Length: 209
Image (cartoon, rainbow, N blue to C red; front, side, top):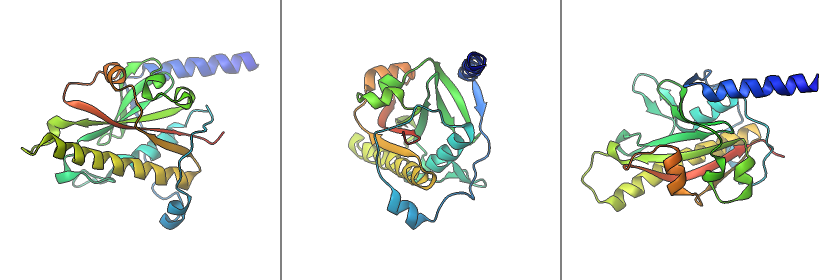
């Protein structure tokens, strides 16, 4: 029986990894704890269980990060300068990597395979169930300001998204840590990033071990 369960799990994971588009369930916006309690519990942890996050949990987490919270305008849960929405959340799972489409509330397949080891140099990154990679697309920034100024804006946008995930994680009892030590070149190639796209930060999320 155990062998059958393992075989079915492996088959389901393989099918999941081959889906070009995964439609996420609607975010559960009525769950969670009061904001002040979440702020009190917000913390970083580098210890994670390897158990994968359910699709509903992933949907809630991504919506918290940068989901659309005003359908009439398409604006997000996290702010960005002049509403450029220039930072995307890439979702690196055990079997595949996706980019989050906030407007469609879906995941778009980028690469099949395990890219987690490229998401950071720490050992825990390789085994944690989810790594979020925040990627700025500078082609969306319609400004003649300096590259340094643009980098400040994109870093701020990524920071807002990171904090939203931290607060969601605190509310739902998940472990999380933001990271800057990333194999930027190799991960960028694996995620098929264009020259105008730059990795800003990464964030590891999972259940407590």
